[in-house]
Image (cartoon, rainbow, N blue to C red; front, side, top):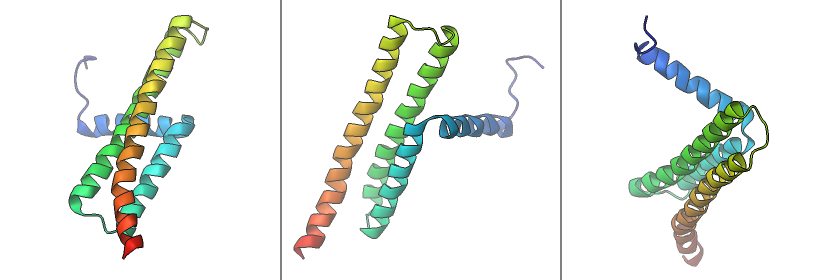
Amino acid sequence: MSKFTSGGYKKSLSYALQGLSVAYKSQRNYRFHLLAGFLSLLGGIFLNFKCIEYCVLILAISFVITAELFNSVIEFALDAVYKNKYSKMVKMAKDLSAGVVLIAAMTSILIGIMLFGRKLLIMYLY
């Protein structure tokens, strides 16, 4: 079998799940974002979010988790290429990818404030 031949959908799914498992086991921030996302979804259930509110919430959560996964990919790849040796350019690349996660998280927090704040304000006032 050629290295360019597909192993099938089951094999691809298996590799993807292995990757998520690696991220879960090795990345503390990934676990934190998963927990925050899960708690946000529970909060949406408690506050009776409408379908569109859930869609926005799920997009915000997946935005942060995706950014965190890309950050991990960049860190693993650069550490492998540079064999864990210090490099100013590697540090800059890692800092930039961490900045992407920060922007994603801050954006999601703002979305959360808008979604949950409005619902909680309505509950509090009535």
